Length: 632
Ligand code: ATP
Ligand code: MG
Image 1 (cartoon, rainbow, N blue to C red):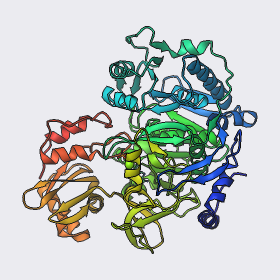
Image 2: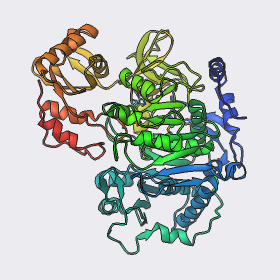
Image 3: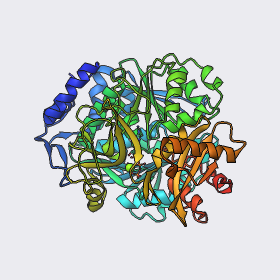
Image 4: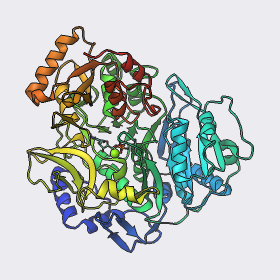
């Protein structure tokens, strides 16, 4: 039987057990999958040496667990519902049986094009079922997929292809996102000028626009698939063989190519999906993330399929054709589980509430949040307006590196608290440490968030850079995995992520966390969201610059600044008062919801000539608007 925790008492018991006997705990979990050969060693290696392994010697293929295993029981159940960019375009549903066939066909195609176990394949595609099929087909033949978000520039795509020496690129002719058209094939052609490793390009038709064609290199998806056999014997993989490479969102530096493995990642994503969301047989689950981020990998692709869930693949954006789109889709398919980012919530809560009220959202049972801390205002809006006060919110803290959710309520099981990711999942042992790496015991404390014991879903490396892997995660606090995040544990032992620990300013010798100041400013009723950066200041060393979005704008900025000063002085200290404030229409956010602080730092410092690569921004035009704006 699969472990399914369904009461808070049970959670506490299971948690205790998982800490006392971690190997047994994970053996039990892993035992629920189909292995061609059982593993020999459940767990080996350590954080200290940066060489953690799980289920070594076990043989499996993750797609047999996502697909083949379900054929006799739920073969005719819907695996994916495809909702296109425009609500009137062709939509379709795909059953587990059809998906299995499509994946087998494309696996045969990949093999016929010379792709072998261990080869890297880059995927740069629209959010369509074919993207999922491409990734699963790679997994089926043991090729390592590297999905690159389809909003990235040619340069970003090229860097990622070069970093892993991909042999093939799979793309679309183009895609539409909202009103925008993105010429994926043109961008790919440009990127490939600098990528000699890529010998083949497979192009899947989506927009039917004119594209250039390189004879001998480019081939059409639909022609290749036509004659490919619909049977395919999955390639046997070792549990520790790489399944995919995925680059972190890069909000703090050069993206890191995280390597996830076949066995541990499978066990972990499946386990977390089932217990956090508590999805049942008839439910319709929808995660609005893009497949180019880890959330898309773990909670659109692998987690739901491993559990036999029905889920939605959404090609569009929350505001197209209008700001009611997400709710329209929820009503249309009777969505029960809805998982999105605080950024999306904040954007939609600025819109007329009629966009929400127009739709029947009574099918909703569970709401999820991921990607950044969710501020209380957004939490309440989500809870009250979308969930009608009835749906638990699972605020899920995790990272590309962790493979799956680490700290989160279990839906309907863990009592929630706005702004808190609450408690660790069974099997996960978080701790807070001080600057010297000393563990901070007790409750009502704050520190750097580390993990004390390895878990199956963790990253096994940064592709091609073992040094950086050890340096980034295991060097600062030997014996722990360091998350890079700051965290508070309140009186009830609940965890609240406060932001990155490296987002720290040094103002007149005082170290101030940007997140702390932002939280204080967020308390002002007019403020929707604030972002703090430092800038060079003659006297203080670093000055404090506050960018913020406000409800209905601000008519008297000088008075408003005074209110902000009073608030920050009261909540933190007069030292933390912003030297400058600027009201903006939007903050520069990545598509995964992260504020790109380096852009704000440039603006604050008055260095706006070279803003670097802004292609990962949700809306690059906000940059010009911010540069043109006025600070007080
Ligand atoms: P890079 O590591 O390249 O800077 P990134 O950290 O933005 O990129 P991700 O792995 O996508 O890339 O993001 C993980 C980070 O997102 C976490 O370390 C944390 O800071 C933040 N985060 C994710 N979920 C939550 C959450 N529920 N609450 C608070 N913060 C969250
Ligand atoms: Mg990170």
